[in-house]
Image 1 (cartoon, rainbow, N blue to C red):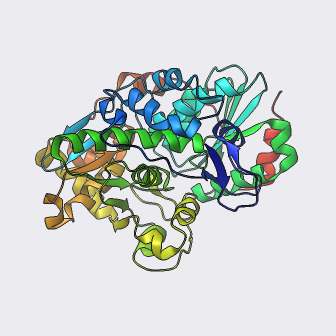
Image 2 (cartoon, rainbow, N blue to C red):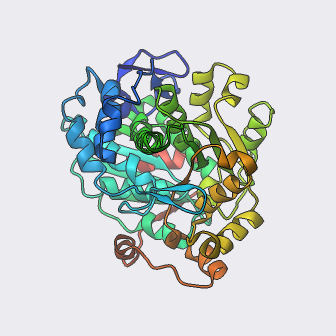
Amino acid sequence: MRFVSTRAASPPVLAGDAMLAGLAPDGGLYVPETFPALDAGGSQAEAATLAETAARVLAPFVAGDALADPLDAVCAEALDFPTPLTEAGGFRVLELFHGPTAAFKDVGARFLAACLARLAGGRERTVLVATSGDTGGAVAAAFAGRPGFRVVLLYPRGRVSDRQEAQLTCWGDNVLSLRVDGDFDDCQRMVKEAFADAGLRERAGLTSANSISIGRLLPQMAYYAWASLALFRATGVAPGFVIPSGNLGNSLACVWARHCGLPVGPIVLATNANETVGDFFAGASWTPRPTVQTLATAMDVGNPSNMERLLHLAGSEAAARREARAIRVSDAEIRDAIRAGPARYGRTWCPHTATGVRAWETLGGEAGERPWVVVATAHPAKFEDVVEPLVGASVPLPPALAELLARPRHFVEIGPDASTLKELVAGLPV
């Protein structure tokens, strides 16, 4: 399969080349040229594990590429942790926080790292990533200590939880952590400007691990395939998904899964006080705006990159609105959902998952028309400063997370200036 740029001014490439490039030369985002038809009643339905499902679902996307032969091994290596689908008082929870950094970003980051390790061909690569919290930690964990790779991650000062910051800065060695005096949109802009510098891109061997990378989005399709097939087999009805949404990569992966014919029903984007996405799905023209800080910090994005992919897929703003809908959740509602979680559902939610739970609660009668899945994106222990006062109890740390938090922190402070970033990247040892 070939991948094309959303801006149509770059030649088509195969999957591996799209992953290595990160961003297309014309500044666009890579998308599949076509979507394969996956039979919900065929071989995909027979897969027992997430890794097996991923290998079967993703096979058409890497057909003809150097990744075709090692795909089974890549999936087995990257997706070696559970992603259980559990009951929670009226809906299911897709628990994506059981990986090494306790967030759903482990799925895409580990898959991308396993792919790039097989594609690098002995050349040094610099993985450049902007993060609003969980992406950077997952990427650092996936690439830390891998020969031939350097990681440069940017995160906004004061806009991530203390435990998230610990995960972003505990690495050293081949990971450079940059604390930016700005918001996530500043970090994302700086990364895009660095990629736009063709000379720097070539000299440093730049590649991306943000959701602008096709290598992040493809494996995320797999857990929507796995969950939707499991529920469709059990009920005969395509489930709906409620997805906490920031940069729209997670949501777009669900949309793509449905375009492949998998049994995905309605898609609800749970958003916070950042109004860009909510206003768009309410009928306003697409208008990025400054970021607003909320309790659900990883969703604090005012200019989500992946809207470009959604608009390309749909062909128009009106058609894009038919792909999903958005439900906005305030900080007060997030607090209420966290506070009520243990008594109402027997669960403690992170602020982002709580946003999804609250959105599901507003569905009313529609909630009983089909099985619904709330996507749980992170472990609540990563946000103890928000969660523990609301539930009145401590949240036990997963062992892998506790080990990372015990390490010393290393970071460099910089302003929101792309030229500073480019100087730092250019000065990295080759």
